Length: 74
Image (tube, rainbow, N blue to C red; front, side, top):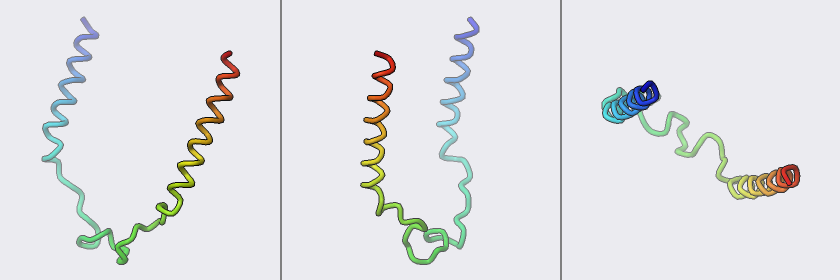
């Protein structure tokens, strides 16, 4: 019975938070609008240059650790 009550309460809170998500006050944009005040319209950190490199490194880590832990379990 207690598990059902906890699940019902969690579901109720989830539904209420979705219902009020649009009516929450939004924080003010600094600098009166635009992109936050850096003036160029570009992001402050140029991460876009490294997206492909970061993707390749992430795939490498996945392959490395997958092989490492498969050898430990087997």
